[in-house]
Image 1 (cartoon, rainbow, N blue to C red):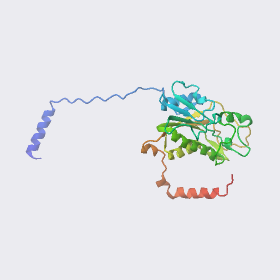
Image 2 (image 1 turned 45 degrees about the vertical axis):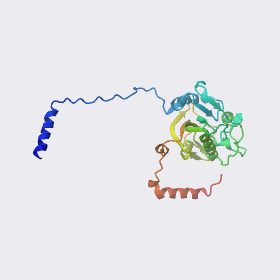
Image 3 (image 1 turned 180 degrees about the vertical axis):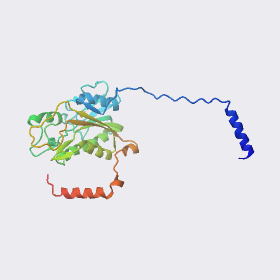
Length: 280
């Protein structure tokens, strides 16, 4: 090392002896330790969980359209002065697929259509008879919804998607879309309705921000059983979507096409070949 650089280095070291270095204080993080939180899993009923969802995701004073209001169970424990509530359903003459609101008028839309494929049949086996009349009383006007083209569980999914398209129209940008649903077994096939809704709505431009699981207290039964093939459903879901979001959020549902490659294509072909002989 040249003598000049060495001399300057030694001088700097000598000067450092007279300087007191004070490490900056670490800033304490905001907030406090607590377990008083809103959790994703809840045991109880709709009227207990729904207010918590609003508290977490919908600011007070928002305009909310409940387009499948029914008996108003969701709202039993919500202060009516907290929100501007617009409630409609088939019994009031309003179809959730054709809403009487302007584009971008609502801050939030709530959707809870019939989730049983039996409530969409038109072959004389319409569900909601006898011991199931409560379903019809809460979820249906006793008539198969108009303009439903699909059958069985696909009719359920069609209703959700068409209602979501209309909800997208009336929601403001970054508006909140709250969807209630439940999985079901249809024609002996497991249909994960909440997954189907999430994937389809993501394609519509809805970001799946949150998910709540609601488990009922009592144990549901069946009138006749020969051999059980699937777990009996005793839980349902509240899905919370946001209309529009950042590119990274909209890409939150990952499909690993680069890993699936030809395997995904072959599997799809096998499924199609197997379904050619299926009649419904």
